[in-house]
Length: 362
Image (cartoon, rainbow, N blue to C red; front, side, top):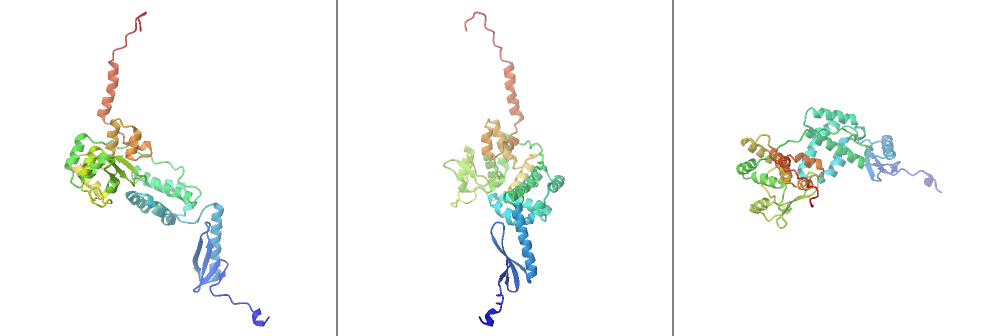
């Protein structure tokens, strides 16, 4: 063997050492995470610093495997932007997506975004909830807490944390539901006075109990005139809901122009905000106090209930999963309750049965 053959071979440029490799004067990390996915990450210009970063990365992965969680140090903001939101936003309706994103951007991320996901504590959430209760309505705070709970439950399910810090959190108590339904005169006045582009929204809402967002997104492909049903494919709870047409709704839909494009909107093109604002101005002009567009949905539930429709059917029409939600809408008019009480009065005036004489044949 020659002397040249005994000399050590020079390290190949770009060669690999201890999970590191060199490229263009920099050392890069080359490793596999707890899920077996390979990562290559630019680290440092010198080997010693890169080696230290590599060891820290391996320690973190090993600790995560030991604890049964992934990326233990991930911040709540990063979890939301990279994991949570890309996964769940497709399951939300357009308007629910807007509201959820608004809650995240305006309230949850400003408060908890810089927290490490694993470092959020129940007392932190409690304190935040108390502060929000001083500034917003119980219904608004409840929606914000529900979004935070869902976020944390997903983190548990996807193994980013062991347990949700919102578990066992006291639920915000809701005030009694607003008792607001329409008289027949109010319904007629609204429909007669509404401007032409707003009236169809009021009419269809009164015939279906649909939410404003569902009406704004209703397309002709969702309308089946043959079976006389209207479908709301993306509802608040994420499930499709089919509602049978009333004769009034059937005639209304027949009177509307129907484009060839099945994806065309059924109702005049108004945003949800435009519907709310327009209806609010109409109610104010008619001096109909304390009336909102969503009250048309309340009115449908109350009307169905007073007609003796079973609660289960009302739930199906409104698209509720929880019977308690349906009960909140079922406010009965004083006149309906008064008529119900006549049953007691008629019973009192019934002639008592005469006792049968002894020995008389039955």
